[in-house]
Amino acid sequence: MHNVDIRNISLGQIHYFIKVAEYGNITKAAAFFNLTQPTLSKKIMSMEEQLDLQLFIRGKKAIRLTPAGRYLYEQWKDSVGRLEENVQHAHILQQGYTKQIVLACMDSFRPDLFMLPLVDRFRESYPDVLIRIESDSAQDIRKMLIHGEADVIFSVLYDFKEKEMENIAWTRLGKCTHAACMKKENPLSQKECLQIGDLKQSDFLCISPMQLPEYIQEVQRVCRKGGFLPNITNYVSSANSLTLNLMTDNDVFLCDRYYADMKEEEHCLIPISDTESGFIMAWRKDSGYAYCDIFVQFALEYMKENGLDWS
Image (tube, rainbow, N blue to C red; front, side, top):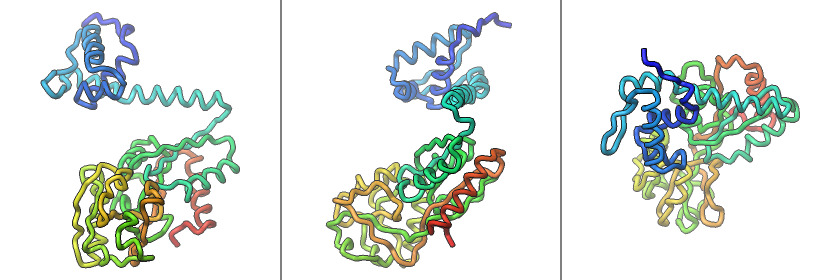
């Protein structure tokens, strides 16, 4: 048995160790903490000396865990997150709240069209419940829900309609057609409504299948209804980047009326008839949290009252 005084290991050091293990790269982990690579390397080496353990095997371009490092990572990886949640909950109590619901929506959505009015109405009825809202990509908010980091999420229909996820319930909301986003100089921008076949000669921008394969599957499905496959000329890493890459008068990408990142002075959204899009609300079946269930029922009633349900 090694005589190691773990009181010398700080929570900060454990956080550094976890992030280096997750990134597998000192430089990327250092950027996360806004540190230089040499500084973070010294902190990790100091931790190894204090523990009398080699935690990583260093390579020229990557760093990987030793068996001892892997064991500690598996034991510690959730500890920092739980401590941060505990402190956050303590702040909630200090502010006079006793309950909290975490919502998440896609960062390419327009929350003013549905979510923010819903939250305002809910807070009027339940002023003692603190609402926290997170915003990220479709795949990331789905992971937040699966891992219990969000209670309820609002996401795009195509990311859920072909999936079966254990302990996740969802319902369709916000029904609308797909739309093509393009520059105002695009000849198709003069149309009030498009047929799918109108896009046959267009150059499509798509979210990379490495990031969100469901998006390109949806684009291909829609185009096949028009009897063609999309001519994809550029891939981007996120929905937020799509408008930035509308370079020519022939570029288009698929979205719907809830898309947030277009500039009205430069771009336009043209609905595509005979297509189906919209957003969904998803929540965990096994949350065991009464106020999550209350929020879900409240949201369903609110959406129906305001014509945003699927019926």
